[in-house]
Length: 115
Length: 114
Image 1 (cartoon, rainbow over the protein chains, first blue to last red):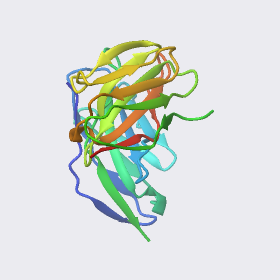
Image 2: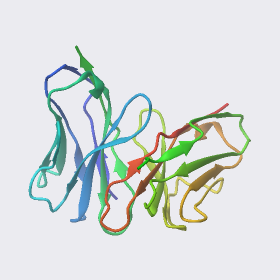
Image 3: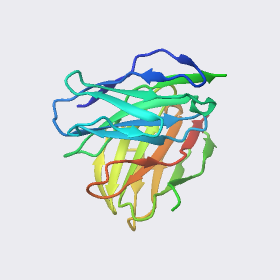
Protein backbone atom coordinates (compact mmCIF):
# COMPACT_ATOMS: atom_id res chain seq x y z
CA UNK A 1 0.00 0.00 0.00
CA UNK A 2 1.11 3.54 -0.65
CA UNK A 3 2.14 5.72 2.27
CA UNK A 4 2.70 9.47 2.34
CA UNK A 5 4.56 11.18 5.16
CA UNK A 6 4.35 14.87 5.95
CA UNK A 7 5.85 15.60 9.35
CA UNK A 8 6.66 19.29 9.43
CA UNK A 9 4.96 21.30 12.16
CA UNK A 10 2.96 24.35 11.23
CA UNK A 11 5.02 26.97 9.43
CA UNK A 12 5.03 30.74 9.45
CA UNK A 13 6.50 32.36 6.37
CA UNK A 14 7.07 35.99 5.58
CA UNK A 15 5.18 37.38 2.61
CA UNK A 16 7.26 37.32 -0.61
CA UNK A 17 9.61 34.66 0.74
CA UNK A 18 9.82 31.09 -0.55
CA UNK A 19 8.71 28.07 1.48
CA UNK A 20 9.46 24.38 1.01
CA UNK A 21 7.04 21.70 2.18
CA UNK A 22 8.42 18.22 2.68
CA UNK A 23 6.80 15.03 1.45
CA UNK A 24 8.19 11.51 1.40
CA UNK A 25 6.38 8.51 0.02
CA UNK A 26 6.67 4.77 0.08
CA UNK A 27 5.64 2.37 -2.64
CA UNK A 28 7.08 -0.68 -4.31
CA UNK A 29 5.41 0.23 -7.58
CA UNK A 30 7.37 1.93 -10.35
CA UNK A 31 4.50 3.76 -12.02
CA UNK A 32 2.84 6.40 -9.91
CA UNK A 33 1.84 10.03 -9.84
CA UNK A 34 2.48 12.57 -7.11
CA UNK A 35 0.16 15.47 -6.42
CA UNK A 36 0.00 18.51 -4.20
CA UNK A 37 -3.31 20.03 -3.14
CA UNK A 38 -4.09 23.19 -1.20
CA UNK A 39 -6.96 23.28 1.29
CA UNK A 40 -7.91 26.72 2.60
CA UNK A 41 -10.17 27.09 5.60
CA UNK A 42 -13.21 26.88 3.32
CA UNK A 43 -12.45 23.19 2.88
CA UNK A 44 -12.14 22.74 -0.87
CA UNK A 45 -9.13 20.76 -2.11
CA UNK A 46 -7.44 22.75 -4.86
CA UNK A 47 -5.10 20.92 -7.23
CA UNK A 48 -1.70 22.61 -7.52
CA UNK A 49 0.80 20.41 -9.33
CA UNK A 50 1.45 16.89 -10.65
CA UNK A 51 4.61 14.84 -11.16
CA UNK A 52 4.68 11.47 -12.87
CA UNK A 53 7.23 8.92 -11.72
CA UNK A 54 8.73 8.73 -15.21
CA UNK A 55 8.92 12.48 -15.74
CA UNK A 56 12.57 13.43 -15.99
CA UNK A 57 12.08 17.11 -15.27
CA UNK A 58 10.65 18.59 -12.11
CA UNK A 59 7.13 19.90 -12.56
CA UNK A 60 6.49 23.62 -12.36
CA UNK A 61 3.20 25.49 -12.34
CA UNK A 62 3.45 29.23 -11.87
CA UNK A 63 4.81 29.90 -8.37
CA UNK A 64 4.71 26.19 -7.53
CA UNK A 65 7.49 23.75 -8.28
CA UNK A 66 7.97 20.17 -7.24
CA UNK A 67 11.43 19.01 -6.21
CA UNK A 68 11.23 15.34 -7.20
CA UNK A 69 14.00 13.07 -5.93
CA UNK A 70 13.00 9.59 -6.97
CA UNK A 71 15.85 7.72 -5.31
CA UNK A 72 15.06 9.36 -1.99
CA UNK A 73 11.31 8.99 -2.57
CA UNK A 74 10.68 12.62 -1.86
CA UNK A 75 8.44 15.14 -3.61
CA UNK A 76 8.83 18.49 -1.91
CA UNK A 77 6.69 21.46 -2.89
CA UNK A 78 8.31 24.85 -3.25
CA UNK A 79 6.13 27.94 -3.20
CA UNK A 80 7.99 31.01 -4.37
CA UNK A 81 7.12 34.61 -3.52
CA UNK A 82 4.53 33.70 -0.86
CA UNK A 83 1.29 35.64 -0.80
CA UNK A 84 -1.21 36.08 2.02
CA UNK A 85 -3.66 33.92 0.07
CA UNK A 86 -1.23 31.01 0.30
CA UNK A 87 -2.17 30.51 3.95
CA UNK A 88 -3.73 27.04 3.98
CA UNK A 89 -3.17 23.35 4.60
CA UNK A 90 -1.12 21.64 1.91
CA UNK A 91 -1.50 17.94 1.18
CA UNK A 92 0.82 15.64 -0.70
CA UNK A 93 -0.85 12.66 -2.38
CA UNK A 94 0.08 9.70 -4.51
CA UNK A 95 -1.77 7.46 -6.92
CA UNK A 96 -0.60 4.34 -8.69
CA UNK A 97 -0.97 4.74 -12.42
CA UNK A 98 -2.11 1.17 -12.95
CA UNK A 99 -4.39 -0.87 -10.78
CA UNK A 100 -6.35 1.13 -8.25
CA UNK A 101 -7.35 4.73 -8.69
CA UNK A 102 -7.39 5.98 -5.15
CA UNK A 103 -5.33 8.90 -3.96
CA UNK A 104 -3.39 8.30 -0.76
CA UNK A 105 -2.88 11.52 1.20
CA UNK A 106 -0.46 12.64 3.87
CA UNK A 107 -1.60 14.47 7.00
CA UNK A 108 -0.80 17.86 5.54
CA UNK A 109 1.36 20.88 6.30
CA UNK A 110 -0.10 24.07 7.77
CA UNK A 111 1.30 27.26 6.27
CA UNK A 112 0.56 30.75 7.55
CA UNK A 113 1.87 33.69 5.53
CA UNK A 114 2.48 36.81 7.57
CA UNK A 115 2.75 40.33 6.15
CA UNK B 1 -16.74 24.72 -17.53
CA UNK B 2 -18.05 24.44 -13.98
CA UNK B 3 -16.20 22.51 -11.34
CA UNK B 4 -17.36 19.70 -9.10
CA UNK B 5 -20.36 20.67 -7.00
CA UNK B 6 -21.67 19.09 -3.82
CA UNK B 7 -24.92 19.48 -1.96
CA UNK B 8 -25.53 20.22 0.83
CA UNK B 9 -22.45 22.06 2.01
CA UNK B 10 -23.31 21.48 5.65
CA UNK B 11 -25.51 18.92 7.37
CA UNK B 12 -26.33 18.55 11.04
CA UNK B 13 -28.24 15.45 12.02
CA UNK B 14 -29.09 13.41 15.08
CA UNK B 15 -27.56 10.03 15.72
CA UNK B 16 -29.57 7.29 14.07
CA UNK B 17 -30.90 9.40 11.21
CA UNK B 18 -30.15 8.74 7.55
CA UNK B 19 -28.41 11.35 5.41
CA UNK B 20 -27.79 11.60 1.68
CA UNK B 21 -25.21 13.72 -0.11
CA UNK B 22 -25.06 14.57 -3.78
CA UNK B 23 -22.09 15.17 -6.04
CA UNK B 24 -22.13 16.56 -9.58
CA UNK B 25 -18.81 15.96 -11.33
CA UNK B 26 -17.21 18.04 -14.04
CA UNK B 27 -19.11 17.31 -17.23
CA UNK B 28 -17.40 14.75 -19.46
CA UNK B 29 -15.52 13.26 -16.48
CA UNK B 30 -16.37 9.60 -16.36
CA UNK B 31 -14.58 8.85 -13.08
CA UNK B 32 -15.99 9.89 -9.73
CA UNK B 33 -14.55 9.40 -6.24
CA UNK B 34 -15.72 9.84 -2.66
CA UNK B 35 -13.34 10.59 0.19
CA UNK B 36 -13.82 11.26 3.89
CA UNK B 37 -11.70 13.70 5.89
CA UNK B 38 -11.68 13.90 9.66
CA UNK B 39 -10.17 16.72 11.66
CA UNK B 40 -6.39 16.94 11.38
CA UNK B 41 -6.13 14.21 8.77
CA UNK B 42 -5.81 13.97 5.03
CA UNK B 43 -8.73 12.66 3.00
CA UNK B 44 -9.26 8.89 2.97
CA UNK B 45 -10.60 7.05 -0.04
CA UNK B 46 -14.11 5.60 0.23
CA UNK B 47 -15.21 4.51 -3.23
CA UNK B 48 -14.74 5.03 -6.96
CA UNK B 49 -17.03 4.89 -10.01
CA UNK B 50 -16.22 4.62 -13.66
CA UNK B 51 -19.36 5.75 -15.41
CA UNK B 52 -22.16 4.01 -13.49
CA UNK B 53 -20.06 1.07 -12.29
CA UNK B 54 -18.74 1.11 -8.73
CA UNK B 55 -15.30 -0.42 -9.20
CA UNK B 56 -13.62 0.03 -5.83
CA UNK B 57 -14.76 0.25 -2.24
CA UNK B 58 -12.62 0.89 0.80
CA UNK B 59 -12.95 -1.14 3.95
CA UNK B 60 -13.91 2.19 5.53
CA UNK B 61 -17.21 1.92 3.68
CA UNK B 62 -19.23 -0.03 6.20
CA UNK B 63 -22.60 -1.61 5.47
CA UNK B 64 -24.27 1.62 6.60
CA UNK B 65 -22.73 3.46 3.66
CA UNK B 66 -23.97 3.14 0.10
CA UNK B 67 -23.06 5.07 -3.00
CA UNK B 68 -24.68 5.17 -6.40
CA UNK B 69 -24.12 6.78 -9.75
CA UNK B 70 -27.20 5.64 -11.62
CA UNK B 71 -26.71 7.31 -14.99
CA UNK B 72 -23.00 7.84 -14.93
CA UNK B 73 -23.39 11.52 -14.13
CA UNK B 74 -24.17 12.67 -10.58
CA UNK B 75 -23.58 10.45 -7.56
CA UNK B 76 -25.18 10.09 -4.15
CA UNK B 77 -23.64 8.89 -0.91
CA UNK B 78 -26.07 7.71 1.75
CA UNK B 79 -25.24 7.00 5.36
CA UNK B 80 -27.85 5.04 7.27
CA UNK B 81 -28.24 5.08 11.05
CA UNK B 82 -25.60 7.78 11.47
CA UNK B 83 -23.15 7.59 14.36
CA UNK B 84 -21.12 10.35 15.98
CA UNK B 85 -18.00 8.85 14.42
CA UNK B 86 -19.43 9.64 10.97
CA UNK B 87 -18.89 13.35 11.63
CA UNK B 88 -16.42 14.43 8.96
CA UNK B 89 -16.01 16.30 5.69
CA UNK B 90 -17.17 14.20 2.72
CA UNK B 91 -15.34 15.15 -0.45
CA UNK B 92 -16.21 14.22 -3.99
CA UNK B 93 -13.75 14.33 -6.88
CA UNK B 94 -13.85 13.59 -10.59
CA UNK B 95 -11.33 12.90 -13.32
CA UNK B 96 -11.23 12.17 -17.01
CA UNK B 97 -10.82 8.67 -18.31
CA UNK B 98 -7.54 6.97 -19.13
CA UNK B 99 -4.72 9.49 -19.30
CA UNK B 100 -6.43 11.99 -17.04
CA UNK B 101 -4.56 11.56 -13.82
CA UNK B 102 -5.69 14.56 -11.85
CA UNK B 103 -8.69 14.37 -9.55
CA UNK B 104 -10.55 17.64 -9.12
CA UNK B 105 -12.42 18.08 -5.87
CA UNK B 106 -15.67 19.70 -4.92
CA UNK B 107 -16.19 21.97 -1.90
CA UNK B 108 -17.20 19.08 0.33
CA UNK B 109 -20.12 18.39 2.64
CA UNK B 110 -19.45 18.88 6.35
CA UNK B 111 -21.45 16.41 8.41
CA UNK B 112 -22.01 16.80 12.14
CA UNK B 113 -23.79 14.00 13.95
CA UNK B 114 -25.13 14.99 17.37
